[in-house]
Image (cartoon, rainbow, N blue to C red):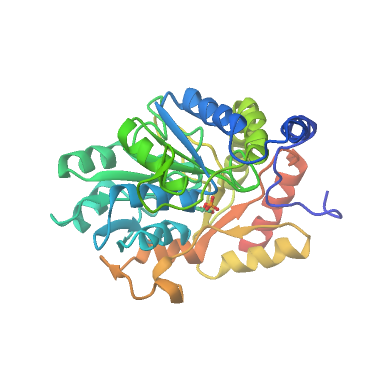
Length: 362
Ligand SMILES: Cc1ncc(COP(=O)(O)O)c(C=O)c1O
């Protein structure tokens, strides 16, 4: 209700997660262990992928993948329109991100954008399936033709599918986030997925101090996910399909309400795909109105967010190599609007949000 306000996101956690944490506590074994393995197995089974490796976040997972691929001094294409973590992981591993534009509708990198940025010295690229919208099939196919290894930043996309195949199974390597604004949460956490057994071993060793058995073969780090956090993940994986169906039904309601409003495009809908709607991002077509809408929503204690960042506009990233003018990324940075979407959101809440948008744009 208005008086209490409407949060942007509410994690779907409760007594079941608390009980599972209690079980771990009673064992006295709190670091990474059996519960982490159980969580990894549940994600691997859910996606139909051979290996799932739990890490402390999506950022550290992507870093682990890039260390395993040894991208030192190599250029790695990434979308400009993303959260800085996508670039940070490349830089941490000694790589050089090359920023490219995204499609204005899907808000993701496309096949033609990849083609225009590719040069033959490149070996790896890292697209983002942002907001829970899968990448277009042509992008993976083009990457295969070019001989590029695909590291998908799937932070937002656990449960998303393209032609019935799960995100996390399609790219060579993928990484998910379990930050509380993501589809499922462990507070903080991440999961690498791949069918490549040899690389999976490398990733495991890297996040485990570089240890192979009792010997420290390489220099690694500590990105282990504790049993305590994994306990939350084990329960969250049991709920994931219900969480996603709830998000899809509420996204549909937003679609219907926003379609009636001029100058606002509802969230992108992809053919032959299941989106997770980790973020419901609509697009305000009239420049300058997005922030006015956000102010009006805030006056009624309704939280909203921008979409995500246009990396080259951020001081830490302005000197990275770019391809093209990145105009779509800039437009999305100025005009995309993320709306509240969570288990407690009611139809009245959604109507209220959309009425405020309507009053502001008219
Ligand atoms: C596209 C993308 N990649 C990576 C991350 C970072 O995930 P984590 O917080 O698990 O490191 C985020 C977080 O919002 C994200 O949106």
